[in-house]
Image (cartoon, rainbow, N blue to C red; front, top):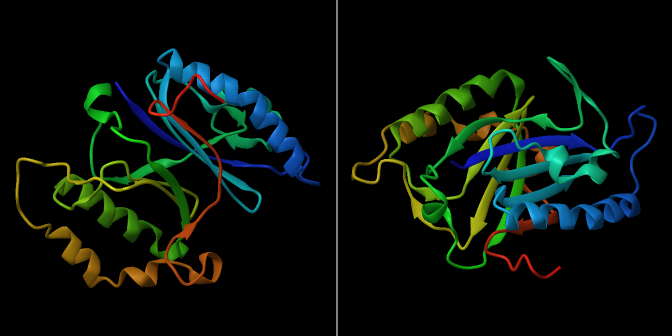
Amino acid sequence: MIYRKNYRASILSKDGNGRASAEAIKEALEKDKSVVREAIASGHCMTVALYQHENMLFLYMEALEEELEPAVLFPHLSELLALWPQKDGFAAWAKMYTIYYHDIPKNEEYWARNEKKKRRGRIAYLHEDKLFSYVYYHKAIVDEGLLEGDRYQFIALHENILFSYFEEPKIFTHIKKDVQEESKVIQEWLAVNPESHFDHTLSGEENFLLLPEIFSMGLEDSVKNP
C-alpha cells in the first residue's frame, strides 16, 4: 500500500532566536541524501520531495510503510528544525491534513512513473474565515470523483496554509474512471467565488505560490547515482 503524506517544518532554531543557515541545511541534506536513496532502493518509499518558503519547509512523501516518518529519512536535517507541539509531545515535522487529489494509488505498478518528471511544490494562504468553505468543497469534489486533474496532485492543509504537490508533464485523470460525467460540485465551488478564499497579500497575485525545490528523489530516478 502507498501512503501519501505531507509535512511542514520550520528552520528556525529550537529556541526561536535564529534560523539554521543555508550552508548547514545544505550539509545536512547531503548527508541525508544517501538515507533517502537507500530507503527508495530498499522499498520503503517511492517519492520524496522537499520545498522551502522563507523559514518553512514543505515535504511530500510516498511511503510504502505507514509508520515511515520524515525524521527517519532526514535524521541530520531534523536536528536543525524547530519543534512543533503535538498531542503526544513535540516533533520536528508537523503533519498536514489531506484535502484534495485526483487519483488513488492502487499499487506500486499502477503508481509508477513511466518517465522522469518535474516535481512541483506550491503553497497558498487561506483567509481564516474561508478555511472551512475551501475544505468543504474540495472534500466534496474528491468524494464525487469526477473532476479531472493531475494524477499525482495532492493538496494538504496545516493551519491556514495549503501545500500542493503535482508533477509535470501532467497525466490527467479522475477518481471514478468508469464514469463519464461532468462534475456538479465544481460548479458549486465556482459559484462561491474561489478567489475570495485566498489571501493574496501573502502569496502574491496567483492563488498558489510556486516554491523552489531543495531536494527531491523518486523511484524513477537512478538511485545508483548521486
